[in-house]
Amino acid sequence: MTRSLSAVVIVCVSALAYSTADARPLHHAGYQRHASHHRHVSHHRLHHRQTVRYHHRARTSRARVRHANPGHASVSHVRHRVAGDARPAAWCGWWMRRHLGVADRSFNLARRWASYGTSAHGPAIGTIVVWRHHVGIITGGSAGRWIVKSGNDSRAVRERQRSLAGAIAFRWPNGLAMR
Image 1 (tube, rainbow, N blue to C red):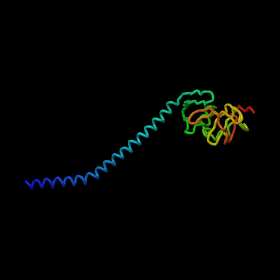
Image 2: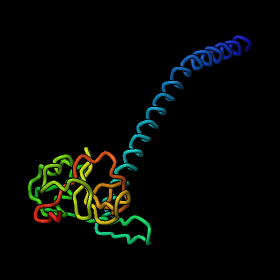
Image 3: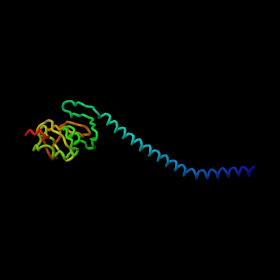
């Protein structure tokens, strides 16, 4: 009886020793699979959030107009669809083209507007103001307090008071030279 009892104890201790040694690598391998799974799931959740945000912006910006209170910037979101004339990522020049009815797609580049129309020799209501990376049209104001309407101003069409510092050109649109 003692022999069989000692044999059982030896078998149990051996099984326990081998199972403990084998459990460590399996446990860590399982953890690594678990961590890898969570990194994978987190990546997909992030991608899903970004996709949802993109589609939400596109859906909510389609034809919505927010009317500003007096003294606040006017914001309008307008959806433009013309076959073959997709809105580029930097779309202030594209918006100005659409606003003035210019077909030449080279004017999607803001700086290109520095050669459009005729020189205005300075800011005035109705002139196009061109910066290196932005373009807009002056819709109001006077010296030092100009109101500029432009596309892609914080991802929207806005009309707001804006500094003209750094402007590289002021141009009268074709047929609108007033001075």
